[in-house]
Image (cartoon, rainbow, N blue to C red; front, side):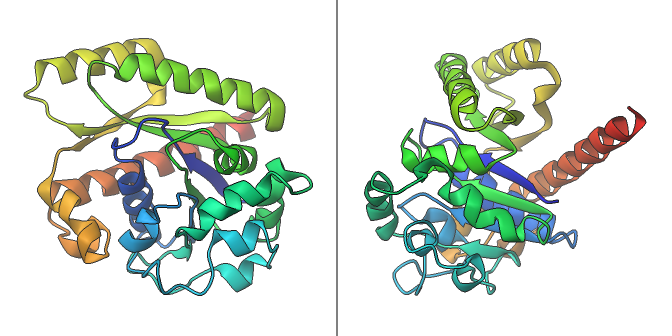
Length: 263
């Protein structure tokens, strides 16, 4: 069964969508079957995948509200070589409509059930706020990947986020866990960044990925060309960092599987 990972942070501008798109592309490059679900009405993951959010015939709205079969909503042709469920402004309407729906917290979980065995990884790009779309993502996910910048308010913010995740899990998904904490836009010359990084590792231990995503111009430029960094500039530091993260994630999954088998 594939792993469903929500990429979430209540704070905007931390590299959430960049992580979702580039990690998905890096895993797809290792011949894993990957699906990206864009639940953010801004549609940045959609545009970053080379899909025009204004022209796409179907979005997450049709999946969640109209209950269309997932195979009818998935877009197969993306620049990142993964499958995509797109988002645009219609998803804002989905958030409102969900309030009227039966079993509104688990609509996404139920929709994904038929394809859980088909994909190796399913990434959900969450909106940067706690709403019914985020609740659906948390309900459907096995784990949460948290991208964050190493800056002054980061530790306080991540504590609040993990508290929110814990409360949501107790209500809609008791098995939900933290997949990992990813340090993004990292500048090793910045003393504060290093201090916060050390505090993160001291507090969260091996939940913090060893891979660090640097500040990188090519990584920032890639979305405007509708492609993940590895297909825009594969030799860039950003593209290499996400490939390294994919490798680290695969190793972690294998180790976890082996330890479960040993028990």
